[in-house]
Each structure stands twice: as C-alpha cells, then as structure tokens.
Length: 501
Image: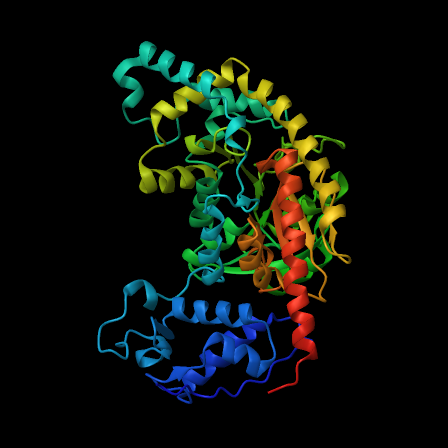
C-alpha cells in the first residue's frame, strides 16, 4: 500500500477566497517550490478533508483543477500523484507522456468548474445553467417556411458566399429594425456576424492588441472573459451596482490606466439582470467621450423586457460614434442560426469588416436570407411579445419558489427583463461550487457564480436561468436545490463539531 504525503496547509476560513481556491494555491506553490516532488502521492480527498476539517467537495474541486492544469495525475485504484515536472510537459509517474489536454495551461477561469457544468446535461437533471431560451419558444414552422421560400426563390445563390459585410437586404432590414429602438444608422454601418459572440470577438480583435486592457463590469458576461483570455487581452473588472457599472470607480481607473475599450451590457445584464438608468447611460457616454475610449455595447437582452420603463440603447444616445453596438437574434428566438449584427461608424467599421473576412469569409448566406424573410414578415416581433409574457410568468414562479425553498439569508434580484436570477447564498453554508455536485445528485443544476467574475470573487453566488423551464419544473428544481443545500449545510455543521485532526 502506497503511503501518502502529509500536506502542510493553513487555510484562512474567514477570508473572501473560497476554500478550494486556497487549496489549489497552496498545493501549486508546494509543487513549484519542490516541496512536493513528481511522483509523490497526495492524501485521498476524504482524508485531506478530515485533516483540514473542511468539506470533501472542496478537496475534490481543488484536485480536479490541478489535474486540469497538469500539476496532478490520477490513477484508478492507486490515488492522486504529483505529475512529472511540476505541471509542465514532463512524464507521469508511470513513465507515459501526459495527455496534451492535461498539460495545456488554462486560458479560462476555473476549468474544473466548467467540467463540472457538463454534469448539468445528465438525463433527469433540471438545468438552470444555460443561457439560451427554451426550444419550445423557437419559431420552427416559420423557419421551415423561410428556408423553403428562400431556396425556391434564390436556388443555388442562397448557398454561395455572401459579401463579408453580410446579405444586403438583411443589412437594410436590420437598419429598419433598430430604428424602432431609437438607433439611427445606415445599412453601410451594419455588419452581419455569426451571433453576438462573434461580434464581441471581432471588436476586441480589431481594437485591441495583445496586452492591451479591456475594462468591464464585475461580474460580467462569461463569454467576454473567455475572449479576453484567449486573445491575451488584459481584463479589468469594475464593481457594479443594481444600476450597472460604478462610474466613479471607472473614471478613477481610466485616469490611472487609460484602457483601450469599455465593455458593458446596459440592459438586463448577464449575470445580474441589472438595468442602467438613463442618466447613468448619459454619464457613461460623456466619460467615454472625454477620454476618447470606445464603448462596446452588448444589447443581446435589450428586448427581453416584461415590465418597467424601456431604456434606449447607448447607441441611440450616441452622437459621436463612440459606441459599437452588438446584438442578434439568438437570445430572442434562434440561437442555433448564429445570426447577429454589429453597428459601427468609421473608421472602426472598415477594420471590423477586414477582421470578419479573415475569420470566416462570410456568415452563411442561407441563414442570413432566412432571417431576412422572417424579419420582413414581422415574425420576430410577434414571437417576442409572446415569449416576454411567458418569461414574466416564469420569473414570477421563480421568485415565489426561491422565497419558499431557498435557505434563510439568501438574497436575489427582481429582474424586469432578461433570463436570470442572480442569487447570493448565505455564507453560513457551502459555496456555490461546493454545493454543485450535491445539487446535481438531487437532480438540479445552475451556473456557478464565480466564473462570471474577473477576480475569483462571488463564491456564494449562483445564476439561474428561470426562462429555461415552465413553472412546474421551476418549483420542482428549486425544491431540490433547497434540499441539497440543507443536506450539505448539515454536513458543515457536523464538521464544525468534529475535533481538529
């Protein structure tokens, strides 16, 4: 029987940093310093949890993260070992080469948590983790009619390359569509993209170079964190309130660092659901103009509104061309069609088109023409009204169920639009990451909150997509989530009573 190495770890139980992140930091530091050498066997997760008087889930999460980074290797029936060469491209203890995926340095935060999120796809799990509308909201019949009509009308031309800027009639239709939101633009300033995500990526590639700084709200959209890390862009998060990004803190940061781009989601922000009031929108524009820093406005949820006053997009208030507006038809209706759009003034537009052409030549023409057919017939406006009414019904069901089943001390927002509840769990129990596996075992999943932060905060936060399920499923899922929290919190209480080893 192999003996395991005793780990010397001191945890800050009152600090903001999650316990499992502290474990990762301590073990990584000991490996890199040579205290833990290649081939050493680490304690089993259960044994280390008892030794440190913490939840076993914290150890499981820490070991998973360190395996993903290549610092540790697991061998069925033998245990967990320090990998060869301290997390670099060395050999494992059995002499074979590490898998390249294990040795790859992480480019996104908390990759082990991302792997955990795959558990949400297990059959029978009610998942509130995703960011898409439910499939029964999709206008399948209209889309089938649109594709058939386009193929009959255009034939093979519908399958050919389009211009990099996009299908001309769709660009005109988008110009007309956004005019109802108060945006005055020309079709020549509209660029059709492969969804809003590609639009964000194109702007970041076009305006920033490796090492430049992008400033955003904190927490922020996970996709922009991914893009920034993949493109090796410095990302700085500014704290936000229920009215959006803190402008006083943003101004101080700009004065000290002068970032190259500001990214915000002013309406029904992901993940918080907050909406920026009109006066704050004007102040943000003034600040950006004063310092000549472009604003990337993500308006993908702008029209998912079911109560409260409609606020104009930043682009509708923009008199100088400082705002680049990205949105699409993915969150409204058709996520799989990957049709978005970007509105930008010169000189940014020409650069964006060149980057778009280099990325994929053009967005698929058949999809563009089908969306144009749907837009021209008012289908999107019709479905949007119906869907928003249903989203409100589901939001109300989620608020009622949260009040009934979530543990005392929990708090959450009351969104006027969008898809999400942003929930803070009481700090007397498990973190959202520690709760996750138990929740999945009870048949429910959610998005773990700290992946939306630029600085690993938010360990007791979770994001729930209430739009994903009808009220009966919301009730069932929230009941299971409350039960999972109570079960794990009881384990915490038992741990508190147990003597330190």
